[in-house]
Image 1 (cartoon, rainbow, N blue to C red):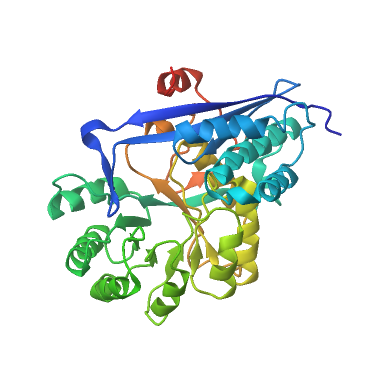
Image 2: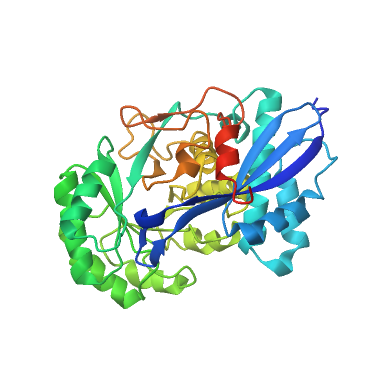
Length: 378
């Protein structure tokens, strides 16, 4: 029986400026990486950590508001709390309200795992694997970058990976050139994912997909804006897998995508969907309809650790002894101290895989010196 209670919760804004090294996508360049950490402490002194997507100035007060509902309550699995808050505050929709809940949810799972001395993967249904296979999420856009410089950076970022993802969405001519350069750089056997970042209408996306057919993309990500669900049906006749979901909040928007088979790969983001609780629900929904899962990961070390634990609990459905393609973990390769310096032992690939941590909870610890250095409000 768990007797500990939630004693304190705080929200910590973090920021890592990129300066002249800024990078991005067809939507524009990013000048800094930012995130909000949630720090939870129980009456037994156990610490739990979570992470929230979104502008820190908006997310921090939302976390503090929601935290008032948790202080003094017994530590438990957070699913019921997340559901109750989404229902109670249904006028807010998803958005940053769901992002704030995401950090609280993940922090509660982390604290619960540490209290029970088991991994979060075990709590989410049981560990199904000892390691996950990352793909290199790279191929970013930079100021004044030539195609040759793009290929050189891709080669450096994707070395040792079975798969890599690049940014497109610049029109069929440039998209075709970038994917051709990527295929030549990665080789014939690598999996090549292409991300449009929702920068196209359906007809534009169709034209670009056809222009890059020779490069054999493994999937095309966010071919349309997140709210253009009907447009996905217009792309289904194309001979390419479609992936999306990173810009969706809560499980509800995934229902139609999955049940109507509008996409092949769902990409819930744990830091915005409502945490591990909602992300796990999407994964179960996807398995029921035979749709693949690959969580979107764009954040810090806690977001990455949460995604590793989630994938550590998902079976290789429908496969048994022979798995034709791994359940991919997105590993962002852009410069980001929030990912590489914030935890004491960053989750980095060794021989192409990332082992599931053996420690309880999320399996990672925060580097308090790095935390102090990266605080936006210091």
